[in-house]
Image 1 (cartoon, rainbow, N blue to C red):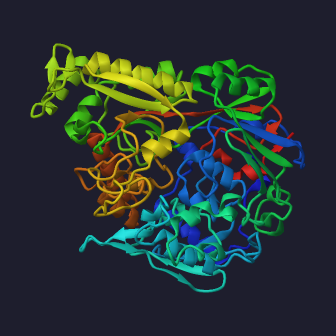
Image 2: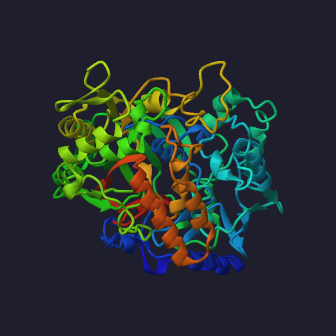
Length: 616
């Protein structure tokens, strides 16, 4: 990335800048790139050419988006498509600094946060200026609606659980001016601005939402034409929606009214952004076709599977970029009533942790482009305490004897037992489980086959890999709901529709590796919902033994840096011990770019300023 005179100036931030640095001090913030052991480099340092507006940037993706209505999505492709037209509140740089986009924040105490919107934000479709009223109405009537009638998957982040009554309480939000509103947390949380609850948070005009809020019209909201065509995005993003051909391509065009070109507190490179006339995302499911398009120059960027990286290392027309990323590759166990019931046992999950050789996965499947994963943080994170993390699947913590002895003990009071080398059920039939993977990702297929082999040889369990399209997996296996006519005790979101014995997915499944989970190295407490019975993304029905969420909350609330490190260290130690997932690897992000693309770098979160990338 550009450096030197491209540093963001402090002009225009006033007192907010001082108080933001106070928050960083309380967090004990350090540069993520340093933590990752990454050095600078890549496309942006190889040329001194000045950016100019020209050309069509074409990116290849293996899967299509689910929707352009961001209230209902949880997949990365949909988020990417939408964010091209909606910037959101602010970005976080690789140096862990807040970079205001639509808004900035201020706080005196780390508990009450005032959000101030820029004065030049305009909705499209005749909805006028973006105001604080839009935000407060959306938060109160959609995010904090009970029940969660919109199905918004991150609604849980806008509540806290009362420690005395156990009741969920909405976080108070108040409008304080035309362009300002306050978020009044119940406890001090210096990391709050860095959490996804506000980081890149988007908004919808009150004029759209008020058509559906009074009757809690879920279907109407999901089908709203202005939401599904991004007609309301106005000047709020670098590009404007042009067209979406399902399963083929998504096209956006340069937004001539982009608000960042009319502000004075951003680096010079933003003042003419974006620098592409058009951005096109081509959906190419077949990996060989996708990589062939990158090699031939049909596309300007594509993700490169680790086992194919050497093919691109010496190509003159493609630059290979390797950077750390926050997503853990895990085996998700289905603990709901349409999965394998023994997964509910911590002892069973721990036993299975000995079955898969993670080091072989990294060396043979990822070709060294990644690290072993043991808990919900990468080992390079400052929050990772190796004295607390229990290791599985490495060294003498791997193998058939280690797996079978523990699994036999864990299942001793059930119908399951070993018949020779096979694990059988009460009828004497070998236990056979499914494991799903993304049909568009060959590395996932190889990983699934390897897991199946390891389970068979080390646990005596037959595992059948099943390829499924990303869209099908999310609709049929991730979304959960109770049977029609059933009123569950509670329901949190589209992905956690109620208790695990009541709400299930449309199709049964046992294990999956389709989704990689974000470990949030910036704000590790953001993964709390993965480890809560009523967590918004808990589609797998995990009920923790220990109060992991409570440790997260304590860590978030303390301003003592050492105490925060201890609490997170304890939480990630407990997660490794309970094995809610089968932690496998932390793959590196490996991408190929046409040799004339500039702007990316070999650092964590390198895409934060993608609107300033350009052709040399």
